[in-house]
Image (cartoon, rainbow, N blue to C red; front, top):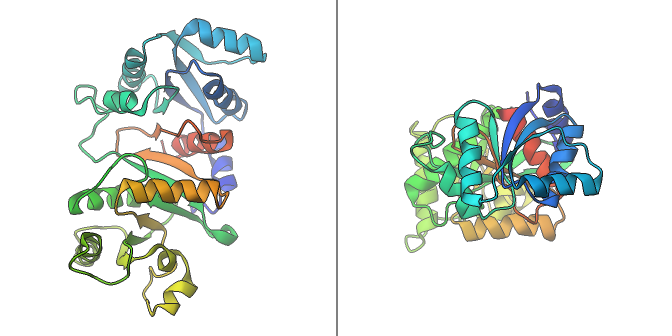
Length: 298
């Protein structure tokens, strides 16, 4: 099913049988507000791991009637471990970060003894709508991988291709980002982009069309690509944008969110199950859409 908009994604997620999501450190009013909304929309069911008394007090204070099971655990490290255990044991089909530090959450996910780490590179993908209900665009990695080398970028791209396929994009067009559009031997990002393009041409990266290097404008704007004489199926119409490092990805995502005022949905992929790993400053709408995305692809 080709997903055109976030509204389309939400409707498809609501139509599916609700999956259970284990939430680590759920004892926070903003986290519980999202869960209450998600329950009311029948997006998912939840198992809340956190301070039982805090969760109960917030629930009563707000007049909510949360249906979720609660497992009492005040310590954030232990809460993250227990949430992961719920997924490993088959009691939940996805994992969600509550109000705890990202490093604590990731440590539990990456624990080799737990089984969530499948050997793939776990990466974050920012998902946004293209203009005119023309589908979704993925930008990666915007939150986890700090400074990937060539093989790291290949794994980041392959994770994004997997997600694009699940969103109905049969042959996603991937642009490898740099600051210029030509290969410059003194700029490693341009060399990596060219190598990844050739790897795709030779079948070392499958299920997508890859081109680069691209600057951001000629990856997303046909007019900008034409103005610089850049042609090909990816030019100006990329479904996937692979950024050179986390600083670029994080800045780009936050610029789109706070300056362009567009909704950006976070997906964390590469683990054995979908992970809802949103920023603390993410809007309720963005967090609900992240839950919808996790529910849809699980």
